[in-house]
Length: 179
Image (tube, rainbow, N blue to C red):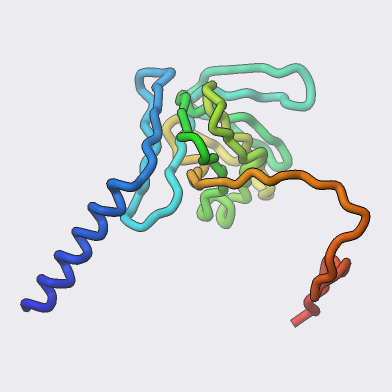
């Protein structure tokens, strides 16, 4: 019993210490009824993003924006789903938008164009494409994607006449074999 209490106290202390070192996201609601991004479970690395009910459609032709409680994404079609949120990412961090695994596996819904820079202050929009074989009805308030907030490094760029040797060299796709 004492050991369990000891381990529990270490866990709580570690969690509180780690939490105090976390960067802060400043979030502005652009619509009153949108839901703030959230980690679903302790230990999740990504925040869930939800659809606000504002959609950008017909991305190959003239851009058309619409408000609706839901929108059908046909197979092969892509849309922009606005979140209704402007998010200030801390300096030195970026947002990496990722698929929700259930959407990807069950429905073929995939995210595209998934980089939010620390300097962007507009409405976060997630580009979604239906790679499945059936229409998908996406609803206002539905979790549409995840975003990982992570530090990044900037590199100095240097042009060279030759690159150093590596084990892999110039071998590309399939370089590691079939099995």
